[in-house]
Length: 544
Length: 88
Image 1: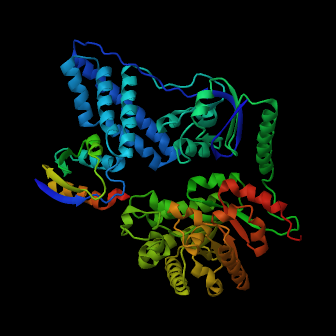
Image 2: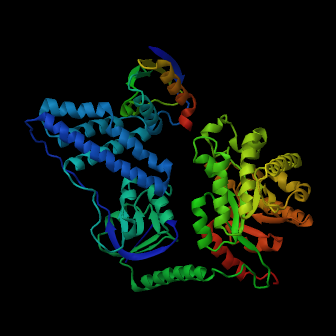
């Protein structure tokens, strides 16, 4: 047995055979051709095929790793179309009467050399991109399809590092785990492993790469970052048990479906789900959430190239309410600005966007946008159990203005003879320290509070969420934050309002007991965390 | 021919993404020829690799020269992209 260790990027255990990822080595021979025009026609066909492959990879990457990570393939497509690159290839074919493979390979070397000689590490690394696209064209010229692993067995993929296109093209059904010698926790491999819920270890080192062989049995522990090649019986048994424990936990969670969210001593709490689009309702229902505690309405604005109309919004809200069949749905009004930008709002660039023109500040300044959303929401309220929640509140007067507009909208609908529910609950996000501190003044004006712990943490600890340099100063369990939540809970209850938590902290089961003791009425978490939190609630005993 | 001087505000300089954005924008206007003059070089703006290879850093002054087609519109579009830091 040999043990190596790296950094685990997804906690899970896998045991199985290793498949060492091999890159296709293309050796290009120089051949004399009599008809350069025919050679250029072959080149054009190969380039078209390469571009089609890249388009496919781009589409796949867009789904699996998101636009920011997929963009590289769009640029690869442009590089294939680059005039200088193509002029160089064609001129080599014409002047030397050689095959297209050789011309591409020579051009690739020249361009790669040019990038490699630049004085900037980022640009030096671009020579890999030139080689990547050139190899793709050469492979298309040689008429080889994309390489797929031959075995039907699930394997542990081991590699020095995986290029984005390589990761995206792997057959996901056959991957047990990823182990790479290099790479960062933000690499494509890491992102993909997290999306696929399979163990992944990065940075296992060159010694690992030298030792690992195809077909060797290995055990991967994504929790500790350890890889055991040819594990001894004891290690194998230990990891198999760990894997079993994981499965047992998953099974238990499945068993918890349909069970009440009640502590051992009989205290009940609601567990709802947070979602950001109509597509996610399936996950909410599959995980047995009691309702939707935060429906982010931004997707309607982000997916559209102009302001979504009242009809478009109404259709989306109605669909959510109907799909949830009488379960509570809390829709948060528009929360853009800060890290979420929408072009057609034409918002000015700001020095401190988190402290800037966002969320309710936009809605109160441009009430026509707000009114459209409120009309759509109230019209949809006739089809289910709606709650409306307003983000980024800092003062009583903001809330009074909001209620004034709400009343006007309701008046309009009544005058137009349009039906809406009389039982729409109105609430606010507690995500600024100001709102928490004056929660005694805000509570009488609302039906509920929902604590947005992510922004509350950012504003209370003065740590920008987007700034990695201050990450080390962010303590999500900071006493100041917990005290603000407790204060808000006390004030909500004193005025007959209920209080929920919809930030990431709601899913932190080390705090479940704390929240239950504060009297929090609802926790709203990602659909996949609903049952985990239910499990934690059912193990808690507040009488002790 | 119309031209305007802009400077690069992105911290990373003209890396892959901005270079790709420029080349893409220029290719959308086949009637206009666009040259970027910077660091004593003439760079064809539709050639993504040439832009990258020029290795233009933050703070570099770039003169955008547009000839043919709707010169003013193309110039405004490109200058706007530089000024807004290519959306970064």
